[in-house]
Length: 291
Image 1 (cartoon, one colour):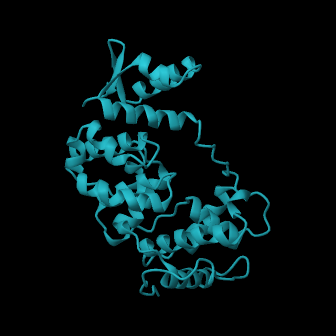
Image 2 (cartoon, one colour; image 1 turned 45 degrees about the vertical axis):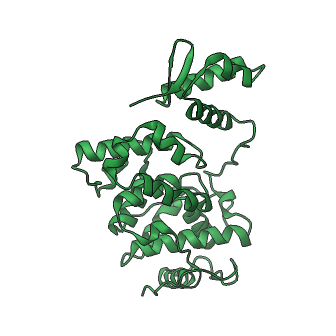
Image 3 (tube, rainbow, N blue to C red; image 1 turned 135 degrees about the horizontal axis):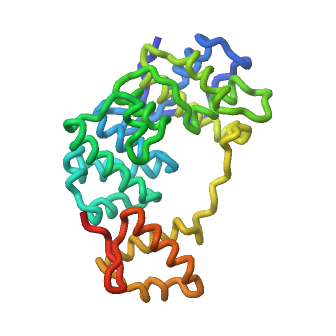
């Protein structure tokens, strides 16, 4: 039933399937797979079943646009091609390669995953979503996604693009939709013959739906507006880390001078970076934590 996917796509939205709500499972499967056949994205992490490469892509894709991940993913994979290389790397080597991705704590979580795999699982990523869900930075949805893409497991999960598709086609008249209502439908319509292709297709369709219709996810109970980046703690965290990567060691006064009038905020941010394992403090100065 799975059509051979053609790389590239026509202008987004030209062939968005129009189906009655709710569609029959088989009708829905055919429409989604056909859409992927015509418009599926050719992304680097879709051209491998290497569990390490898929783990890297899944953590990178958390809260980050595909375009940005597409630019950084091959650079990261070249620098750290396997679990052992990443596990043995220093944080000062990892963070410059991660720059531009945002949410730098994911880089630490990814390295911690590499430590666990090399030290506790013989260098092989477990294919059990219950085990993966206990790894740093990996919740149940990401664990299931990894198992679908790396191991072809027919597991049901929800992420933002998948949620958008199911609300659009199966909950068109609902004003508020809970994931507990969506998940049984995801399970019922799961294309078990090829979960990897199925979830790629759902994610691409969900991405395109966002550009041609009012975002269905606004009706999800999980919907929240992302806070502005400019002036945020997240932006300052990134600036401080870039400063430390460039100068190796920076005195507390130099950091405070850059952000006048906000001493309590800067103390809070520095304290959080220290607790999270990014930086260490000694003698009134800060540096990237060596491992």
